[in-house]
Length: 170
Image 1 (cartoon, rainbow, N blue to C red):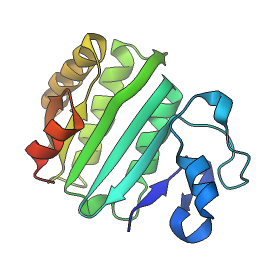
Image 2 (image 1 turned 180 degrees about the horizontal axis):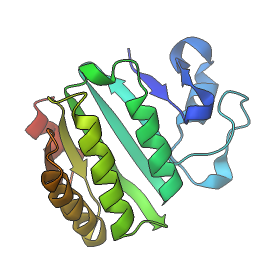
Image 3 (image 1 turned 45 degrees about the horizontal axis):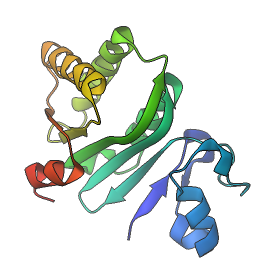
Image 4 (image 1 turned 180 degrees about the vertical axis):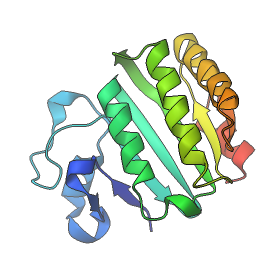
């Protein structure tokens, strides 16, 4: 069974057990902000979802993404009760159309925080899927900063989710 984690203020919601099929569809629709759900558990719109699948997790982003939303997504991931057991992470940025407030300083900050998080889960393999040269440049900077900070995670960059899954063996 897969379940979806929504932003921290909503907590962990087992959508398949708590919501109707129509509400699940609304809550997980990766479309623009004009399609916001009015469900009380879903609240405001966030352009990401976290999907737990077996021994790993997918962190999927779409649309217009801000620094705050990346921060919230990571906090939701690190706060998951099974975080220490995850063996892989796929950060899927293929659906990202634009970003705001994300710069080299923020990328380094993410790498520092993830390096610290790697001490709690040393076996995690991280596959980052990018959709263009700007994202690729940021991810390469992230990888370099992670190495400097002695992150335990093995991090690779891919152009497709299929290639990331092949590398992870999932």
